[in-house]
Length: 500
Image (cartoon, rainbow, N blue to C red; front, side, top):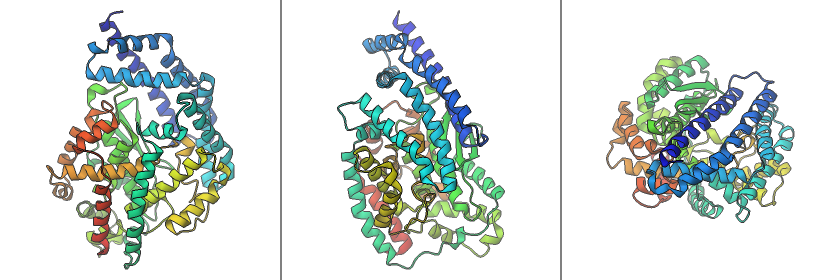
């Protein structure tokens, strides 16, 4: 085999993998949006077959020989090809350590667990979900030890979503955040509370849907390549490549702000994915490099842009058009203050910027303790409720608004949650760099997202997974990650809204 033939086979292999990912992604997307209620078994069957074929393709002697040949001749490869070979070999060597039967069984489990989670949440019944969650946690830990037997299994899970991330780094990061956020929350609590009645009332779903498409267009999404649907827990997924992106939301007729910020959040994910350079399509480099950087984009658009005074001024005329009776006599400044109200609450996805990371810390601590054997899955509801009282000072009334509120564990996303908090902090540091060359507030208030999107595309999006997360971060930031940017951002926002 010549190096030219091997390079051609490398691209053909990745196109085939992308096709399998497309098929499996469509099944997942359908199951969480429009699929009939009692079709989980059908999806599990299809996914088990596709997972087996993907496993065989990835770990076959032919595939391994091809990648090892390319790795041995990497001096003849370009930068993109070297990174492709590295990522593919790493993934394959990890997969080879998991017995195929167990890998397929886990894929089937996740389909069933997700279906049961939806039912359990609706019924607010953790016990219905518990047996499946026990299997998910046990399998995730077992697979981590298969792949890296000498490594802390929870560190392995963290590294799945942010390469190189460890609990030691998380403990340091969260410790610093908590030492700053808790006193700041007390300062805010001592001030007169913000009136957020502007967001509460009756808001028809069709008008909220119109607002969703307005927001998607305004932030710069290409509606020819990005679709919108509804689901229980909003998410974003790429189907086969960055040319087909799907975002979802959930409408609440008594509070339009929940869906509004879900759309902007998921839209941030979609901007990152669709912003990948076209020549990365159908390769392992297509799409975001890590979930922390992915969440930096979603949280950047949701909060740094979406909860800015400039954005609230820009969008307010549209709110008046869609909800004229409710908005009569109201102002953009009232709306800005309402969406920046800082107050402990039950639901992570609806929480304010100041308390959000406390929600993440609770999930992180629970995951660690389960992996360490200090906490049993059956005890999660009681411990969840205790920690919400300790961290946020609130009582959890039921499982639906407590331990069952997130879909992540049902999908096997253990170790994911810290990505949200890191993403918040990355975004604040990105903002500081962006403002050196972009008139951020002027762009947002005028509704011209072009310069902001162009900056993100040039510095972050177009690279896909070409660089390691830390390499990309330090290039964009022109230095090391510093959480003080985020802490200062939070203090500045709270000072503005509450007059600290």
